[in-house]
Image (cartoon, rainbow, N blue to C red; front, side, top):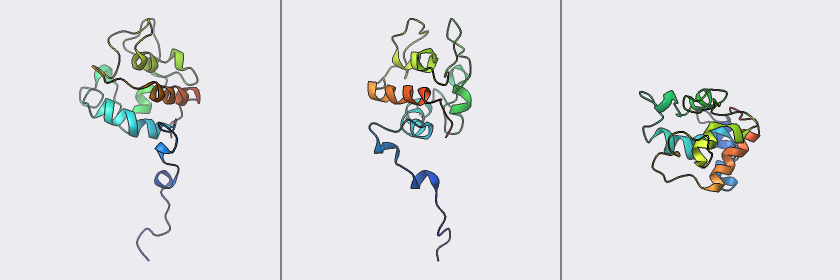
Length: 132
């Protein structure tokens, strides 16, 4: 048989990120659909010189988001508080309406995320902000 026959890739053989509109509330889907194209490939949140020291490339985003204090928020806030999207600075930055916002709404200069996309990120946080 072919090399690798019978080996199952758990990501590609699992549900597609887009089988739920607009995408699944799982970190690897948020990474694929939002963080990589919008935050990292823009050059803003990738090394070297990641803005606010926050690298959002694949494999780095979780460690730079969950339970990590924002360099910008006052009063101090963590970037992602598992189970609590309303007190996660990531949501404050993406929604751009909270009075705790410092600097501009993200992504810088827009286009900004749709409410449906924001709801998925909120749901991931609400679900415990797991690293999958």
